[in-house]
Every structure is written in C-alpha cells, then in structure tokens.
Length: 470
Picture 1 (cartoon, rainbow, N blue to C red):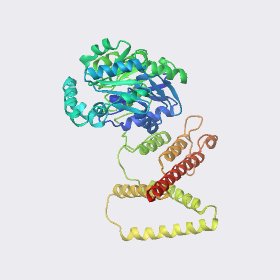
Picture 2: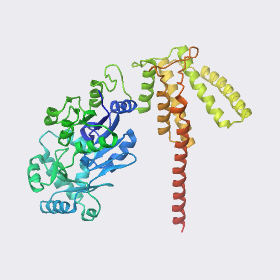
Picture 3: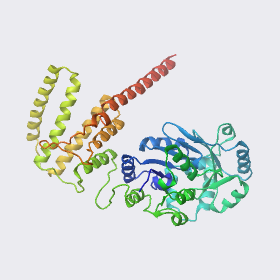
Picture 4: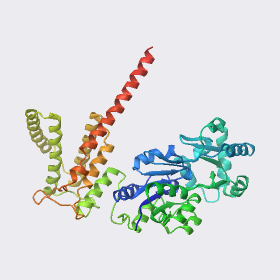
C-alpha cells in the first residue's frame, strides 16, 4: 500500500460515544507516525476545538469547518470565509423562522447555546441513548426547555469578523427546504439535529486535496475514516474510505471497507486489516496509560513479544530489572553533584548505606504475600516516587517522556533489527544514533521553554499582586 496520509472525522469516529479517544486509537496513531504516514483530522468542528487535540496527539494537520479552514501546527494553509451578503440572508432566515444558529470563527463558535450544548460530552451520551428517528423530538424538546434557561445569543456583532461556517438547528426532513432557500450553499450534517452551512465549492474532500497539494500526495495515497453524511464525498473519492460500524447506512454503502464501531476499536482494526499497523484484540491488551503503551511497543519491537498475562518476575530477572534502575539512580546522583567527584562519591556511599538500611527494614517487616502483589506494589511506589521527584523539581515530564521514547525507538540497526551486548544483554545504539536520536538537546530546549513560561507566569502574578495592593 502506498498510503501517505490518513484522515479522521471526529464525532462518531476518532471520538468514542463519550467523546473520549480509545487507547487503541492512540497507539495506532503513534504507529502510523513512526512509519512516516501523515495523520490529521477532517471535521465539521472549528480550529479552536481542534487545536488542543492536534497538540495532544501530535497530528500533522486539520481540515476544519468542513474544509473552510485548514491549518498545521505552524501555518494556516487555507481560510475561506462566507461572504457577508449570504451571512445576512442566513441571519434574516433564522430570525424569521425562529432558528438557532451559531457562527464559526477562527477563535471559536459563537451564537446558540443550544448548539453549543450539542457539542458537549453529555449531548453525545444523550444522543447515543435516544432511539433512531427521534431528532424532531430532541430538537423541539431542547428548543423549548433549554431556551427558557439560556436565550439565544445576539450574534450580529460577530458578523464583523470572518465567518467560515454556519450551524443551524434543523432536522433531516428540513434539509431540502434549506437547500432551496440557499442554493449557493452546501447543506451537510454530522448529527440529526443540526446542519452545517458552507459554500458549495467546499467540503472535506476539497480540503484533503489542498492538504495533498501542500504535502505532495493525491487521493490515491489517502485513507479516510468517517461515519456521517458530511463524510460521504471524502470516503467515496479517496483510495480507501473506511466507514465506522456506527456509521449511517448510506455511508456504509459507499465505503471501501466497514470496520467496527468507534466504541470497539474500529480505527485500529481497520488499519490492521490493511496492514498499516499491528493490532490484535485477542493477543494484546492496551492500557489507558499512554506512556505504558509506548514502552510496551518498545519492548514488543526489541524483544519480539510482550507479556499479556500478569506474572511475577523470578529472582534473577528481578535482579536484572533492579540493576537497570540502580544505574539510573546513580546517574541521577552524579547529575546532582554537578561534576564534583568528591560529592558524588559521598552520595554513592550514602546510597550503599541506604540500601543496607532498606534490607534490614524489609527483613524486619517481612510479610506473607504473593510475589506478584509485592513486586507490583513496589514498582508502582517507584513510579509514584519518580513522579514526586518531578513534581518537586517543577518539571512537566510529558514532552520529555516522548523524547526519550523516540530515542529508544531509534535503537534499530540498518538491518531492521535491534542488537544486544553479548555480556550485559543491554540494547546497543546504531552509529548514527547520537546525531539522529539522542534526547539531551531536546530535553534542554524543553526545560528552557518550561522555565520561560513559569517565569512569565510569576511576573504576571507579581504584577497582579502589585495592582491589588494599590
């Protein structure tokens, strides 16, 4: 397969029914990126909603507002606003017909509180509970009950800034009426209670085309996932259009492949079906701890296997694992000594003393428990102490962990295999590892960034305190 880019719709696709992201999906995205496959979003939601998700998943691009606003972490690739004349027509129609609308800007969605509620996790849960065919009931109930509490916002002032998409409360049966009323607009939807309104020459597929022109790929090198009406054009024209198991009947009929639902690892299963990732729900478990999953993938790559059933370490293997940890503790002490060899020797001697004390303490307090319980208890305590040390150092480990993980994943030799020291069995580093993967420089830059942000916040706090004192 010559797949260069994979696009995910959000609601009903990348998101589960509770607006979470399945652990299997996170692992799948990491594996795609390690294979240099571009990964991004194609959604009806706006850039303000999408940006934090891009940062969290390290995505390459986002096609938002159904192709109206396209950006990468560094650049805006395309931004096409709706002309003011059309916007005024929509506003008049909404006012005359008592319709809730929201206006999508680069900074967020403004207008209807009713539509904003529809974007929440709670609304997703409710829509999953409601029987099919109840969109009219839901719309009318929300409209009459919610409106008493939160009236529609006055959005006329918002029209002064660029508007890229309009969202309007409307049921499926009302789509034809809106298409007739606004022939210059594409009326599409991703849910049963509202429509998205954009120019006719837009859409997710056109957005993908623009991204492809920027990165150098075409539709034949694209896989896309979706579940709703606004995904149809995209899924029909890319090489591999994947419908989620929870997709509408029309979407499934047009798709190249139908996978499991968004709540049952559909994305990972489809990517594995086409050989883009290695995923097996029968042989592998996936944790909700994403750092654990990354380390597990490292061991799978280096050892060719992973442990799927909880088991205790036998004494000799436990000794090896403890030795690895001791080496890192000694490096931690050496760094704290800041080049002072006498101080380092003193710290190392103290460590020996601490070990002797710990041995005596454990012997005195020894209790009967299964080896697995005792080992896991101690390992999680080590993890907790490590996080505590980072807390007391004031360091956010998130990006730094990723740097170290990428460096460890880079320990593959040109023959595609890891190499091991014959005596210690430690993983060896390829010749070009220092230049390509060594994490120290990245760690230094990340720590400097964290310091700058912390100092900026401290200055702001001081300024605010001075104002309060005056």
